[in-house]
Image (cartoon, rainbow, N blue to C red; front, side):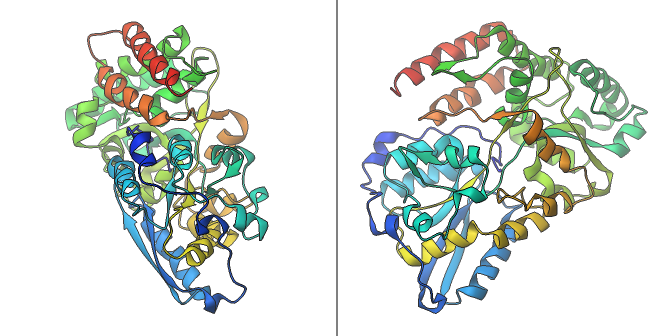
Length: 429
């Protein structure tokens, strides 16, 4: 999640970031970790956005302090909806956290405006080895020939469902052979049986990563290709229409209803029978009152006969203006270590990016978590990004999600968004 991690866009003005004077040539860029941990001293701030992962991050800090006792790390939590807006404000006043979470859509913006320290020193000293992480994630967190992020985790999308609610409604449980038609047919039966009790058939949040990106990709459409928007493509429009039909039929909440109570909260409180969502929710699932009723299967197949999921992952990055570069570098290196990966894996906080550590994540909960790993290996597509991804992410948030279930068909909404998105993409060149 990280993404949580849904990756709804937040507009970040490049001009505001440029004005802050951050410099990737600062001492932080060449920070190296002394051989003697006792020499590493100072106070650090570590910014994250997922409260469900906070306990695991605290355990990682505890393990770091066992090796580096003279460094105090304070975790700063901000909800995802405010997270990047807050970072933008901090960047404009040279007060970014020392180390913080970064996502793919915003990496090029912050790196391009000299807000982040590249990993040159850590890689040269072999404190961070890019070979330990999936190549696609290293590439996602690189810009202009330099790597800026240490991959933390990776995520894909699957179908979560509540076995107890399916049994109560006398509806057959989902299988790996399900199609979109099967999904809609089950939703209709679930609504008829459970709707009078205030339970939704599907508690989807109408987000890009969790819902309409997988639908578009599975149907043979695309979000961005060769610097052009895919929202006007007929296959993409069909993917959008799938979700619009789900909302219009009352099977899943509207964007406004999700704003009041997110779909995941409905699902994990037993108020929705199924949802499309990611592996970043495992820790939330394990703390929910319905934890023993949950199961996971692959996403249903589109009419094309294919299923696709975007693959994304978070990274840890360091501010180019870190107050204590040595301490920040030591912490960043530890966050990218196998030990840290295993801590978050065993906690079910996230599927770690460090190669060979996913088994502990798969075994961290009594669900078919290997579904997410199989998805990454068998039918994933890269998460769509550009230099200023957040600009057109905002178009998605403002214009696509609210239109689901509305009066306008997606054959009108999609092309209209595509035109605005192409205009935004044209300004990136």
